[in-house]
Length: 316
Image 1 (tube, rainbow, N blue to C red):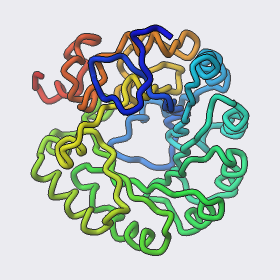
Image 2: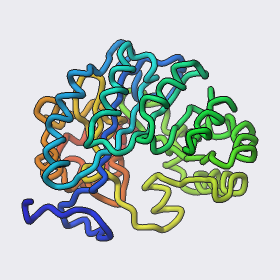
Image 3: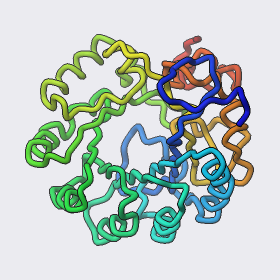
């Protein structure tokens, strides 16, 4: 191992170049989806589908670091809706058989069908948790996941006009099922669907804190505060954004991006040429206790105008 590269354990020193030993690989299979969320970053990929060949090429490149360095891969299997991919079953079978993948988190954006059950059976013990879209989740979904001894994650999007949606429904589900966790997704500005500045709660810290206070009072310890921005501002925690040391994001065209919400950025990597160590070395300064949206090193790698913050005429 290059002496400048360290595996992440307990050290959170941003001056080091280090890699999370459980490395996240987010496979964005398609933008095709039965829902129409106004802040969806996958909208440009409505008619695009990540090919199984691209996925196999990626893991041909990733596998060597699993064998030589003991890195394990946790796959976030998402879309759009994964079941809208014409070859979702073949992809799931590949993931279930790939030894370097030790955990899978599928995201489901569709009402319950037999496909849901088939997916759970194919992925088997590799399932870490199952995330359902809060708009479509049913008790049947949660019951089936409970049968295999796994937890269900239900997300609330912190975005103006969206936070209150489904809170009552999710409260009922959390009270009824002990395997339910409620997660917060702090929506950040993005070029694909910029919206209006006033829609983004991260620009209004007091309003954001008020919303989180309300959610904590409703869900208590069932609430996950996973956003780096929330952890820093609300919990005063030192917490580093998992880009690039802890995660890589693959778009339906095979492009590798530092964050799914930043799919317009060109890292120079795709599923064919991806090299984990080269990627981490190239973008190591993106490791920070800030979301990539706020990262002060952003234009070390991309033009300032590529940052969605500038959609609102602001400079960092």
